[in-house]
Length: 415
Image (cartoon, rainbow, N blue to C red; front, side, top):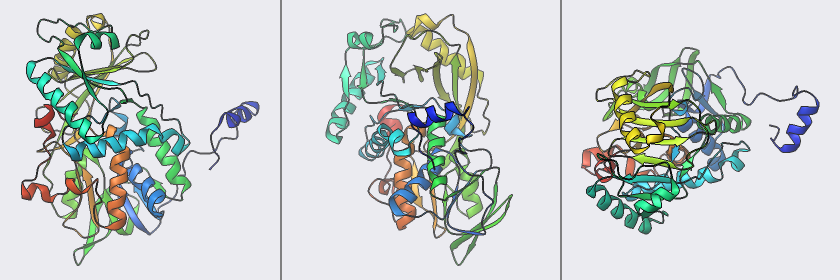
């Protein structure tokens, strides 16, 4: 793989950009691999990358029924933060945030990581107490956050209205080293690195059956034929339950569409990420000038990627009160992503009842920010057959034992 650099850009400019290589190969599938990963989104590609980088396992196929990064990886609002209350959550999300900081250098691919800072607005007395508690917990966890005053909120985001009649701003939990990254670039960077290690990325290749013998996984049937494997890793976000059923077990998950939209582009007006959990709305500004707005998940189970207009209306109505400047903007596009959610709104990184079959899912609305940390932890689980320190709390056995990691109750929202 030829390294990207300023010199490479200059060289290709002189020959009219005719010498660029394909970013990743498009091979035909082999009959057998050491590891088959189902899902070529951020989590699946990150797992493959760290399998190769950390454990030297490169006889790997990453199978995707659509196109690379075409699921939730390409449909989210790109927020990166680690200011969680529960220790296991803070650990894996902080690992992810720290890996994002050096990802462009590690992958030799600009993922456009922007540590612009993330603030979570306190708009009720209950949220003030909750975020102050989280700030204290983060201090013990080694995560840099602080609870800031309304005046400091206004300094960081001048377009915000502090004294909205329904949703006044009473302070915020501020993480200055949080931010955003380019979601497509994260997937493309990992894919390029995996391909360079000799791994096979198989797009337009749907898994239709999972095979087993004597309680151990043996392979999969795909739309491109039979593929044997020694180990199988399932990382398919909203379709986790579907693949689990193929493997013969059930997951404590439900899937629903999560809403997002962007405005028409405008001049730069905010350089931080603002989250308002009371109204379940959050907003940042992209490099193109669009306001990237996220809303809540549908209140009913579904697999649609269109989203529903009533959530868009509720989110925009509340955000207009908090940011009056946006009231006359037009909506450019709107969509939904299918997220899978557990009862405690924390993920599953676990062995399964089927031997040598591993599952990673249930990230709910927090999937993008966790990609590198999730991949790091999942790669260790697949390589060693047992979870490491990051993954151990998120096993399936916690639901049987009542050992929940309840971020939904702790934070009031699972983002």
